[in-house]
Length: 204
Image (tube, rainbow, N blue to C red; front, side, top):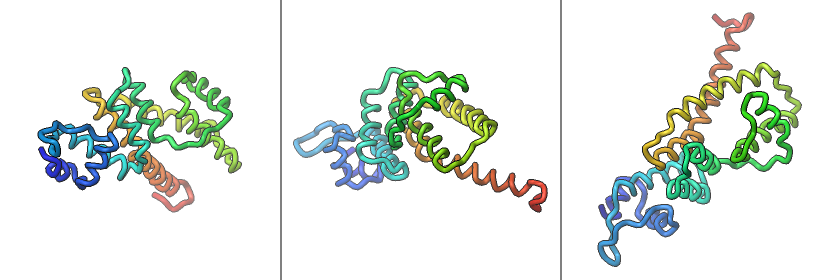
């Protein structure tokens, strides 16, 4: 297909398609002349991925470049692919002390190892924010979060596509960016429903 058809099918303006080509985010098509090229379904899929990452995903071009790099040269294992994709959506500032996080991970049966630093940063920053606010999270509540987060993560990891790096990266990155607000919304709905049913609250 010509670039105009590519633009129409991917719902991305031609000038934007050309920009992604110049930036190396979109592979070159097959040249048919000095000024013309033919594109395939793979180009449509890549453009839709980029559009989703920048649009609903809210990623920067630099982050999209990381995702594309993982697609172009996918890691050897799904585990490494997951790490590469999640690294693109991590914006947490570094936290110096990971001792508490490492102690918790060991207690949960997840001994810390190489390749997990970005995830540790997220958890360390979140726990530090609780401390700064003077909020004490009961151990049984944290344990419940761990239990259910593990179940959710297991289902999601089991569902990671294995037929292509593009599909896997799209699933992991968009699943992280777009599903986390869904999880938060579900938690708040559950809070509302359960609190209304407590004795003395007028619920059923």
